Amino acid sequence: MKELKKLFSNKQNIEVYKTVLPPVGVNSYILIKEESIIIVDPGIGIADTLSSLLMGKKDVSILLTHAHFDHIAGIDELPEAKIFGKSEVLSGLIKPEINLSSMFGGNPLIVENKNHVILNAEKNSFKGFNFKSLLFPGHTTGDTIFDFDDFILTGDFIFTDSIGRTDFPNSNEKKMRESLSRFRKYLSVKNGSTYILPGHMGYCDVKTLFKNNFYLSMY
Image 1 (cartoon, helix red, strand yellow):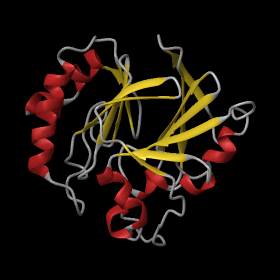
Image 2 (tube, helix red, strand yellow):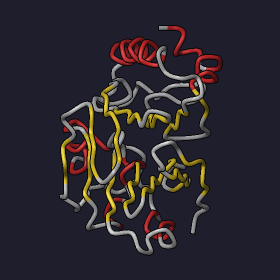
Image 3 (spheres, rainbow, N blue to C red):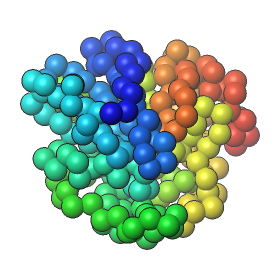
């Protein structure tokens, strides 16, 4: 079982946990509020990692920031979970050419769980969780951030001191530049202590992101 670390509890009484899972060291986040759990970008081994937290929890849902294979590889370990994501993301669950599962020498990944729920709206509310879902394409066509007010999940769009690669199929450098410009404006009105939780490596707050991420100030 992989280590599960509690990061913090926020003002919505959401407990935020993080674990790093195969196949490529993805940050899988677990959000818990009362009897409900949201898993963000489940990697391989997510079910075993969650076993101690699932006791007494009635609802388990999945949020996806994008559809690259490392961020979706653990979905079928949770066959009853509903999968929430933008339409651009959900289409990649059954298309290996989009999720890039064959590109790195692995077997083509086609997710069997078809409990898909498309997030069309910017503002979302379910099972006591309230958040915004916003597209910032560049690394993929469907890069989505999830803003829970005092923490933001950014997937592989932006990391603490770098950004997602734009040399993959379905990446777009021009759109990445545009997204970074929009994201800088979006963050300009956020509290500096707002946490940024990326899809790989460590996390930081907005103030530190502006200080250490060269790309954010470049565009």
